[in-house]
Picture 1 (cartoon, rainbow, N blue to C red):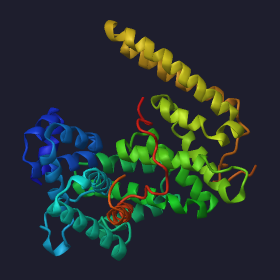
Picture 2 (picture 1 turned 180 degrees about the horizontal axis):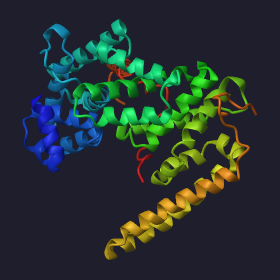
Picture 3 (picture 1 turned 90 degrees about the horizontal axis):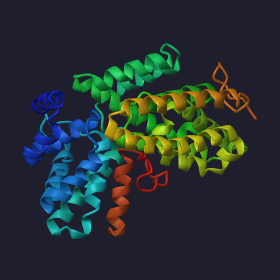
Picture 4 (picture 1 turned 90 degrees about the vertical axis):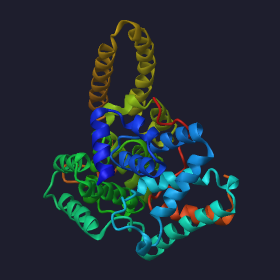
Length: 376
């Protein structure tokens, strides 16, 4: 409760980064984890910065922090702050970078953490990080969406309220829903057409409405790239390609924010072959972004940034409209939801760590994006 109150105060006063630097390690890491869960902090970037600033002492503190979080349930304090799956994944990958430099005690701690995370996976499955009542509410929300009781718009409003709520349990329900949705990606190809249509719209709207960012945004975009790389002319992969296309269509107005993501889209042969209008739009967006960047540099001196941003938004909207009008025959879902047919770590620890990471977020099915792939 103390840490949650502190986070609220820090966010209101805009002093989060200063407080993090002045706090004890235990308080600091808990506060950073809470901030990351609410999307106030890019945890991966912050960990790297703290490592650069404080060195091995910070790594040791992070190791102790994870060791405390993943002690057996009967050895953990009842009031311990929940560590989200995303944060657990980021902390584990951070620690694995330094495994070769660990002493015997640190190696033992890391193995214990990995073993506990792996045992949680084997006993309870990948969704064990959330309390049963949180899982139940998340599942009930999904049932309401897929049964048609809630529209996609209503679902996005609900998720926004859960994410921004000051109630910690609401935040956990939000995190659970995002995690479970991403965890289901590997089964999307088995979804009926209507349910896959709803899923694609929900997936894309999460991006459009900025309900995912940092790690979760990276995962969402990776999944969409992966889906779009599936051959659209093969019966077994057509569903996934169409899922990716329909998800992408929900956040077209934001594509100009990620030029490198657009570049990855342009590298997919299926996109060039099946949707030349989209390719034309992406290429024009990249060219226009270069012009806007040059204009932005000039605007820095004159204070004209607002005008440049307005031009960018207007440009994106007008080009999307033109693209959709000129590509009305492209494959999509109909109004009823039916698809229209056309490192140096040891091998043992690394393997165990991979299994443990999968318990919290399914990333292994996709190749990583090159460094900086989501940067403007």
